[in-house]
Image 1 (cartoon, rainbow, N blue to C red):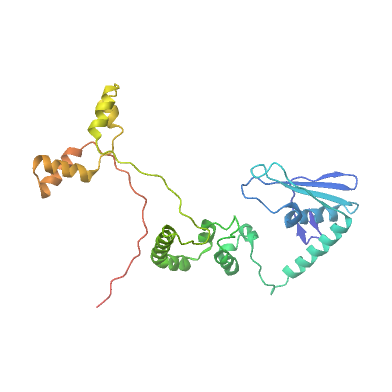
Image 2 (spheres, one colour):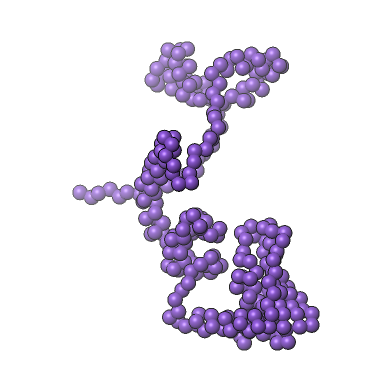
Length: 272
């Protein structure tokens, strides 16, 4: 569907009856799109239908998002609204056709294949207010727009930023504990952790219930440091002999799980 070969669109469905049209647009993502009365995509579809079928006097459009809402709200374009929307779209097309037209970044940038090379889109992503950040401007979306050099610059500052963030959190906790309000922030209990200080008593109680030694041991985690200390106390070994005893004790009983690689910066050696 096109309008004077200037503007194209491909609606999911267009239902026509007499001089009325209905355009539903299915969206299966979990991010809520603009409501019908503000949705420029659906408004463009309405103009395209009006252009293709000039006898149309009324067009209804609605975004259908089953993963977001079961109560979609349609919008109705009357004849006057359709003429206004057509003129608005024509003006936008003329402006966009200007080679010196300024770029206007926004949530629509996520659909643009050039966003990774667009300084305006990148600045929009990085300057978005954190408190009112649109749902689509996620940390992943921001990181994906950075050039290699800018990504490297961010990594260089990451350690300092993390230290500042930690210090700010610690300071906020200290003030809140002292009764000093810090905006809307409060202290929230994160629960407790427990350490078994008498495992032999727990084992005896489990044995009384019929739990076998193998079943009990499947619930136990062995700390290498604690085990090394126990071997040292039992055998009197030290140094390399102690390390060898630890290796022999654990032989065939360990499985290795590789950690995810961490980032490290190559620092060239200074030449004399």
